[in-house]
Image (cartoon, rainbow, N blue to C red; front, side, top):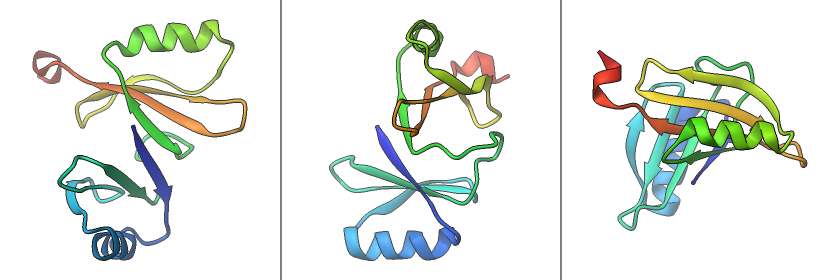
Length: 115
């Protein structure tokens, strides 16, 4: 699970968290950057989601995103971004929880699906 902070300036946010938390950049798509420490703890900062109309508050990666979507629908969760294969190699959807938080649920695509 990775918390995601929406920021106006990704570079400034990265610099602050790098200096304060001692984290290093492990992923940088320009619009979202993920930092991590040596223990594997992660934090993402983003300006806006590249393909969704809403920014998620947290990312949770699962083994079977299709099953997670089925469970979300069965639970009556509001799906705010449909199941989508993204060009950066993940399949994901977003749901809004009862408190209004937006959860990005995803899994990495199998390499053959990226071709």
